[in-house]
Length: 221
Image (cartoon, rainbow, N blue to C red; front, side):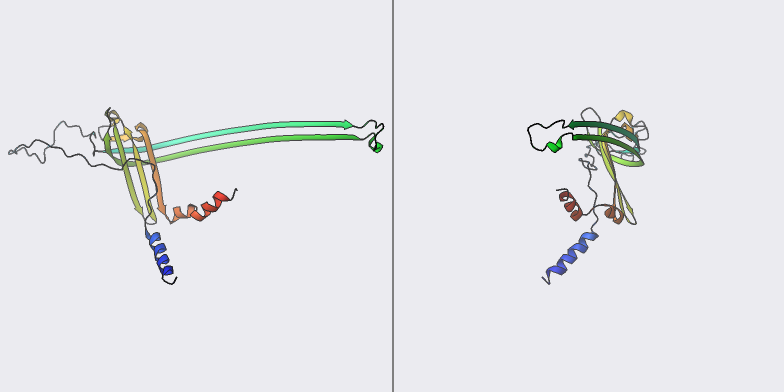
């Protein structure tokens, strides 16, 4: 026991020092390397140099695996929902004992019994949600689909003093929506998944611990 206690303490300290990466809902990889291209060799001349050659009319927009695209994230959503339910039920019963003939308990003669039941329900609900996310992220083409659309994905990590922030983006881009500056608006990306998560002591303090979640799952029972 004397040797186990220091070992457990060391494991706890090392666990606290490890940077935890928030889980993601993006299934595909964040980046992909371009496939090697076998270009035909040509000799260099006095002016022409193959290494620094740039075609004059080449389109610089992304179209191959490994190319990068700038995504302008400008998402703004707003939703509101109101509901109201009302139910009412009322029931009344009047009963009287007029005469008791040939039976005991004649003292009940003339007794009146009254029963009333009323049930009212008034329920109201209101839900309002508003989100505004503005940022810029450069993603990588990880696959060219059969119809020419580009499957893109990317991640940006920002290390701050008290933790790290993670911005992840993935979706399908139509090449016709890519501008001449190689940028696309996030509203023009299909199947877009945008994530903004962070880790640090502030986010850890806002999350419920595993022991609290364990007891919370059994308390209703």
